[in-house]
Length: 341
Image 1 (cartoon, rainbow, N blue to C red):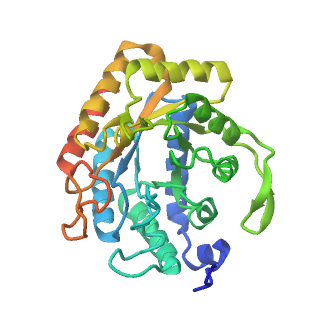
Image 2: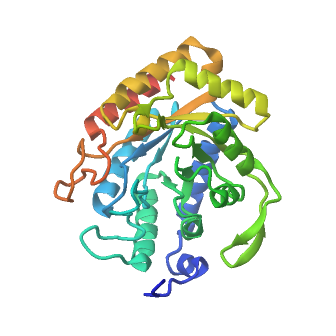
């Protein structure tokens, strides 16, 4: 049984109530162009999606993004930095804190309408403060319309990559959409998901309309590691594994073949400091093999102000979900990546 608690306005109403200012639209359009150029192979720059596991509170997220904006000025000739502002949190067992969208205050009850407005304000303030537009995970495709004018990069999680609605909505988005390998690690399933997202002419119901999509040539692969039948993590960032994905890409004829390496999750076993070692190995492999370098175009890195994680929101700028690198290590890592591009 569903108990109706509160009517949520249509996306058009919310966008009109909390619009992105005209000057920031220009900033976002330029950031969109830069990110798309990386995926299209029009530049040698690398794409870096970096930020906290989940954005649970606006103030530390804005603090963090401002730091990224300043750091971006030092590396913008080598990197396209996209802050990770993830406002929906998937839960392995389906329960627990589900992100700012549903619960804008982790210590209070669910309030989706307040969550939507809080998220829009956060993104707008973040663009204004840093000059960078962000990435978010499209956990619930129906919710994408509430933030579609704010994002530069969209991630499809491992639990969602086989879902038909995620594939369909991705095919109507005109931004880079990173599709993670499924939890099983299946490369054919991953490539099928990308194929579906790149395919136009998809007709379905979305936001109370029958829509037809144009296809998204910027949909691409994200390797986040796999989990076997016993719950063991299986990394897939190593040279041989990545080259097998590249071989699969070559057989499919997909447009703009690109791979982003997720340095955390099952690649690191959620041992957050391992992200540094993983990035270093991948960067060395880019130097070793020109095909590896051609296809591997960036990283996802989980990072916040303070390293690690906490169960409750006590320490400012520290994750309340998965553990993250702290700012000092993050800054050093980003500068190191830029030096090796």
